[in-house]
Each structure stands twice: as C-alpha cells, then as structure tokens.
Length: 159
Image (cartoon, rainbow, N blue to C red):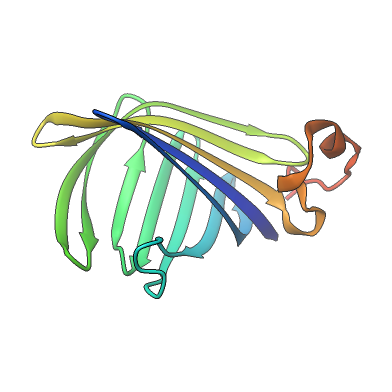
C-alpha cells in the first residue's frame, strides 16, 4: 500500500534537536509483522540517497538503512543493542537502549512511538524520541485534523 510517512525525531543531549520528515513510502503486513519502506537523504548531502526499511514485530522495531548511510538499529524496551553506523565519513559503533515502544493503529494511521538512549562506550550521549506515523497516500491524511480523519474511511488496519 502506498503511504505518506511523517517521522519526527527529537534528540536531547546538551541541547535539544528536533527533525521532521514527510515522505512517501510503502507499507505491508505479513504474519503480524509491519513493514515500511521509503527513500531519504539529509539536508547536507541531498544527492546521496538512503533506502530505509522499518520492521515492527511486537514491541521490537528494526530500522535498516542502505545506501549513503548503512546500519541496522534495533529498539526494544529493556534491551541494549549494538550497531555499526556507517556514513561516507566513517563508521561509528553505537549502542541503543530502548526505554519504550508504543504501537497503535486506527483506520487512518499506524503510529509507532519509541524512546531510547544512544550510548558510546557505555556513556549515554543522547536521549531520543522517535515518532513514525503512516497514513494512506490517497487520502492526504498527514495534513488533516483529527476530526477530518474521523470522517475519512480508509482502513490501514485491514491490511
């Protein structure tokens, strides 16, 4: 299914940085596992494309990136997972400690909210929140208010 993705990330360390991405992607469900696919780049190197796959199984979220950035991050409550984060500038070894993963579905939206720490050499370098919202692409739901969404009959939960 074609979707619109709204991804909002907040990182807190000495300062707080929030980024928001709106993009198109695809979504499907297989045996209770949710899959989201999209392509993206960053503001500094927009010509370098990275393919993203987000896999949600229970309260475990895997974010895999291939292309300009290469990594496989796993966020699960109470788990510490290590990954190599490869960029054009070098490789960082990062630890991700999941504090919470909340998944909710309505006929208009699949919503995944995660809280996690990023650690380097055992030291917390940032506390993070990531919110992923997926809406059916044919309904422009990202721009709708909640009352407008209630009037909309597209059904993501039926997939």
